[in-house]
Image (cartoon, rainbow, N blue to C red; front, side):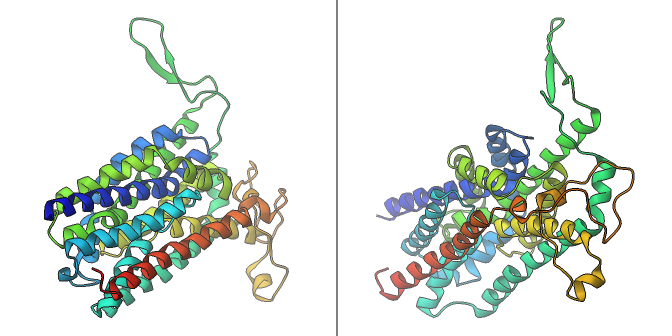
Length: 386
């Protein structure tokens, strides 16, 4: 009976990891795919490898936090662990079905919190710490990118000139016995270097996603001793990879194409800031949302760029608020960047930065998925069925 229940627990853990892969791949590689730097298959392969690496290193702290600090380890009997993981997977499946990158960490913590509330064993101090970071982290992400967008981005864009030329980035020279890679006919060394940088930063983001999210799939099973830490991380990493190669295609489209059209430099900034923030939180054991942080980076960066059209004094005195546009993320190629308060040649349109309907759908599911998992978990464990 115990072996059969453990098998069911592993199946449910894989189901959760599968949905995590579908959600997190879009967040990690959506900007790179949306800017045509990577294809979806390559994004899935890189996501698998680097998510496993993140889970194997920083992810251990998050597994420990979720597997024995929010509620005592003694709460995670095998039936309870299976039920908690099931609620997480079900909520994430609903979100992924609609092509929205859900907050897997919030969903998993919601299910565990529902268990703790039902049994009166929830550690209020730990939950307060986690929720505080959930509030603070998106604000930090927004303001870091807003400052970069307002004061730094135009100079970086004018200096780096991260353009994409038509045609293949790299071709194979088949003259001679061994094919040799060469730059495409229109590819410059600057463009090649910037493309490599985009891929490297996307992999860093996948690393941070793994560090934060492997716990969501296996923390209850590791907490009750059914799996040791290493085995649990391997199971979660493999399941995340399965989701990356299958259902992640819809979330890649949502983040990379529907939510916003990102230039290469913007993708780099969004990925670097959000990945660094989540990696830091994972290192201190806080399960945080990569999806929320990445989206707030996108909005903050665009808002910061748009506010260059007014001076700080005008903004504080209640002057006309600037409209936000993805064109605010694309600087004209001139020797001089427009001074603060000067109009850029590109007209700013709010609809170009992010689609309001898509953004509203994303926020709705961020709130819905942890609520579903917490309510269902509380109802089940309050009834005393398990």
